[in-house]
Length: 125
Image 1: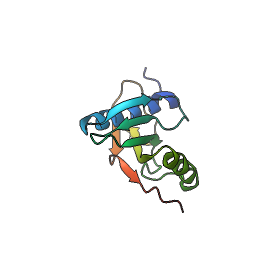
Image 2: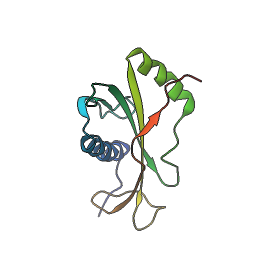
Image 3: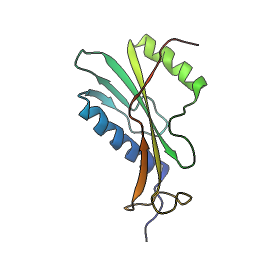
């Protein structure tokens, strides 16, 4: 019988999805941190050597993966500015493919909602 994915496993799944997107877009990884609750998950550079912090969040149905905590993000923006980095937010929506009210299960189909890498404006509010 399949078991529900743990929070760390859901996070790792989201990280794999975002990591593939970053590779496809030609980013080079400088650091990867898959520890749940540690940010950023990816530190990378583009072809112009611009630094990027990528914040990955696995979000379960019915929550919206495109929303993030604005107050927390303001704090993180200060860190990015000090490090001369830009920020991408990558919310990864996951749900059980057969019944969205049930958890995502190990080795079972799931539905993905991922709008790609969302740039976060660095101006402080």
